[in-house]
Image 1 (cartoon, helix red, strand yellow):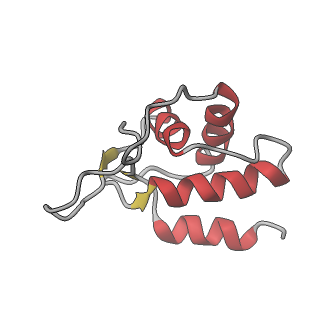
Image 2 (image 1 turned 60 degrees about the horizontal axis):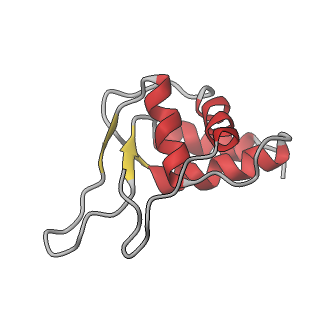
Length: 106
């Protein structure tokens, strides 16, 4: 995992990883990375805040949780002229994520 441009790596908080693990456990794995880790980070934060877990999940915590659960984690494609960012593609389906978010109470 890489920090964002110009940023130093930070340690990953265990409570954030725990929140992301419990959140991602709702999904079936796919054979390829499909959803941007940054999108998962934000969905896990919203879910965590409503569920009494961490309302902040770092991008790194989302990636670590996906790896822990055995989800496919692959490099996020970046144009050749840009430095690779900290995001990854995680193996869950967009449709399943959208349905889960839509079913969650506001």
